[in-house]
Picture 1: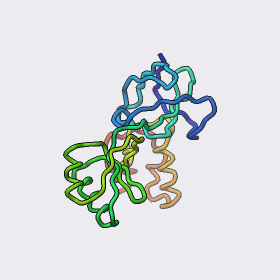
Picture 2: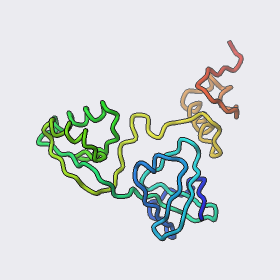
Picture 3: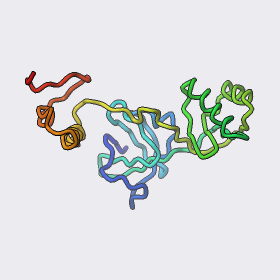
Picture 4: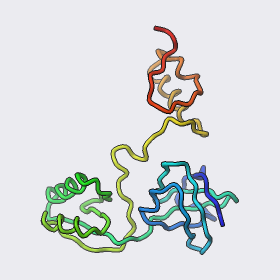
Length: 191
């Protein structure tokens, strides 16, 4: 069984020699799960807590195997409308219910839910039941962020960029390598 604990360094969608992992949205929201690659190989995924996979992500197994994540086809509602106002109204009501929605040019896609189907029919939009890949919007906050230490040094790079733009008013921040679990004020001791 292959074991995956990290994302691959490469980010290309069609990396030669990569294998495919086709999983539905619900599973892509988990950081730990078991699955089977399209070639039948069993896989155990142990990504950092809070990690979420998206279509096209590239993972690296413990033996160096590259695995491309593919959004699996799912039973969905495909929503269209006679006007952009009607489609916007449908999107508003779905968002008000915190429903994962994929937004496209002139359509919405969401999980096939009978309660939401009745609501959408009441709004006068057109609905089709389809079997398609589902990649909903990640929301206003994207994949989220964290202040835990990261091996790639992204926080340090962000600090360098911040200081390059704003100068050295907070120069004590740039050189620190401490980990912070909370958004906390950071001072240099100069008051």
